[in-house]
Length: 459
Image 1 (cartoon, rainbow, N blue to C red):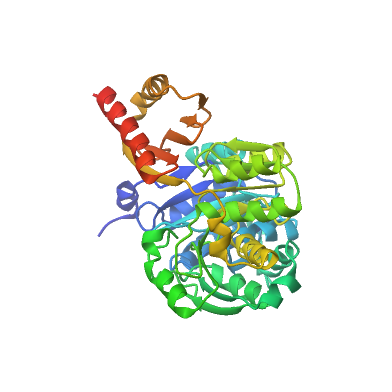
Image 2 (cartoon, helix red, strand yellow):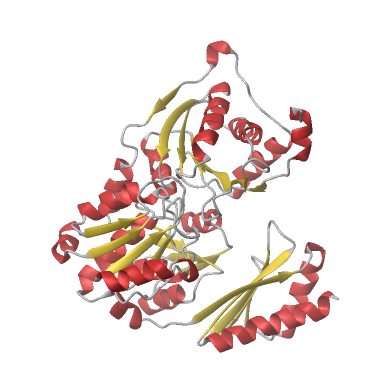
């Protein structure tokens, strides 16, 4: 028989970043890891209420119990929202004036994974400085276990989705959308999105067909909402006579759009469409990350508003948004961020505001998209050790003669009509390469040129 000590020796470490933890359940992510990680998080907090949620994965209920026990043993009061989207949890933290939040989710990872996203009292993913404190506390196995008299309590939240619904509806003209009586296909893929998604679409007077309604983590297709995973959903939109299709990832912070012809518009367009709608009515600074499409920058220039680009990662986008008091922000991975609702990527914001854009312009989503410039983006990766990364980046930027160079996150090289980003992975000995250009061929040429140069100089 394997002893607990022997089992622990066989365990591999989960992937830990400054904003959370992720790993394969049973090997990298165990109840022991969950308890220790949450205890470390608690050691950086004052006493108070912590909001807890999960995205519907089959392992979520088990991990929720482990997390609850760790929170209570640390003297925290737990407000359990059960199955809830990540942006809804962020709103609930603020609404309940909690000191923190924990979302149990592995985002778009396969079913074997789960993880934790940490929120501070602002209802946003914790910024890097707070995340480093948690990471160090976890490495040092810091905890603040309390005695019997100070053990915390746990209660179930009553309608935890309502505060988020109210805030999202406040950002659009409800009656204008209702008059359109849109036919909408919502694919939540058995994640957390269907609960609020259906309520939101009902409030907006849409005729809704929902796929993957039950939040049980038994995904109907791979959970990342990218084109190759949504072929059947695209066909359903085309043949079903829908005005639009919306596809969420398991914790519903990302949204992909399908037009009325069943054409995958994609995640890159989600924030672009939302920014387009905002700038039609309001003016202010726009923020996105350095790996997102240039379409957002194009819109900002067209409307004469400031544009800012951050490092990759939601926490970095939010930090910059707050520092420049941005009107709007987001990431090209399908995550609009509207400060009026919360500083979290939000598929529900995307759903409501894209429908409002269609209602305002009285045209189809395909017509709106066709009026925007469309560049081609290619994403790739290659093996490169961290030891060689810095020197390789320097040689690359010196060799490609780009008129504009941004080194805040790897290196981004910009020309008037195209760009290339090379950045190291935080978790693997690889580099990620992203290029955007007027054509797929031009984008591929940039990627291949960079890969060939790196391959030659890595030997």
